[in-house]
Amino acid sequence: MTMGAQDKLTLRPLGLWDPAEGEAAEGPRRLLAGGPLSFGHCEAVLRSDQGLRRAALSLPAIEAWAEEQTPGLGAEAAAILQRLSSPRGSLGGLTLERPRIMGILNITPDSFSDGGDRFDPEVAVRDGLAMLEEGADILDVGGESTRPGAAAISLEEERARVLPVVKGLVQAGACVSIDTRHAAIMQDAVAAGAAMINDVTALAGDPDSLAVAAAAEVPVILMHMQGEPRTMQQDPRYRHVALDIYDYLAERLEACAAAGIALERLVVDPGIGFGKTVAHNLQLLEQIAVFHGLGCPVLLGASRKSFIARLSHGEAPKDRLPGSLAAVLFALQRGVQILRVHDVAETAQAVAVWQAMMQAPSGFGATDKGHRALV
Image 1: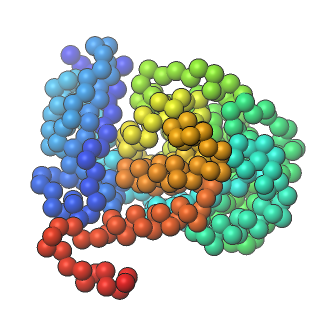
Image 2: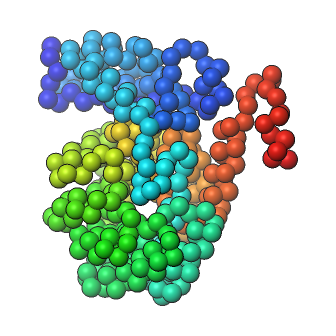
Image 3: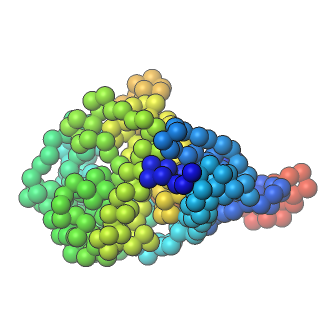
């Protein structure tokens, strides 16, 4: 049997090790996206006309298993393993050797968590600069709410909201991302100095977005959203949520390549809370390492999302910090490189402690010499 048009293989790294554990592990292993985590096993999932086949496999066994399932699929397995382990390049001048924090600046009256807090451009710029001091690497400026049920606004209104803030932050030396689904706003914001584009429609919501993003020559974040903001939470459904979204993002990467946008400029975001139930969000978080198989950095935007309150005691958005940090740390253990958050200082502290723990020696024979300088 030859490989069919419907045969789709994905590999999800399992049992991710920190550096010390990886050194002690037996058997072949690879660094995940260049490190610091490493893996020696994957869950292989093959979808075909015969249904879904899964197996937990050591690295040496993966290509042979794939070839046995469908002749010709071994080469695809090798390609995915290469994408899983290849180091990620820099984005907008930022290396990804450590997790990067993207601070959220909503210049809106109606965002779900902080609507109205920064509607004044001067306040937004002031708060953005404070986020930089607190540890943000990127400031994500958005002028249109995409919360569930949100209505669209005019381009003129969005432009008036975001451009003064983009200009003010760029003049202060910030790395700014423009959060928009409209090509005209992307173009104007990049002209004003924005160093990234963040699109909740993955450059599919505006027919001019692909061309504008290609011409802009800046990194682009491609997010998955089922439906559109006004309707996305009305009974969202998937066959296999992580796999369905993986396929969608793979298709958007292909569309970007056809438009002249290199893979090195792209970031994927599975879109926590955008057309997903609580169960969908939990599955995405648990399986988020699969998206490294697309070959580009992965972003998580779970900050203050409603699923946190639904799993807890119904807390208001600004009272969801502990749950937001739990999601951040869970994602870091699966190699996520960019964290989009409201609470920058608290996230930066959590990331700093996580990094230190990742670098700690493992085992009872370890020396404490490397830690005396931190006392």
